Amino acid sequence: MPTPSKGDRTRVSTRVPKAVAKELERRRIEAGASSESQFLADLLAAWTGHKELVVELDQEVLQLTA
Picture (spheres, rainbow, N blue to C red):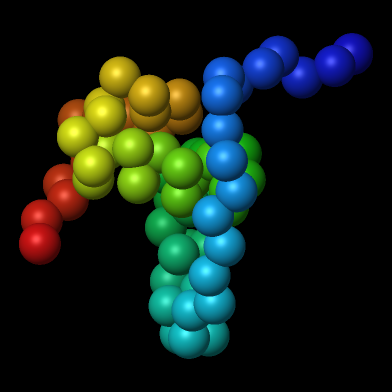
């Protein structure tokens, strides 16, 4: 069965230090996100003020500070 569309999206890619990647993976698993891509998309949506676009993460646990 095909996966439902998550809307109009574009690719963003970057390289991060291994220690950062390891911590992101730990936090993704802890948050219960289905994939690294969705986890990062949700974090970035919340961080940029688009909480309505967060798909999987519980918005109450997103404590994003600069």
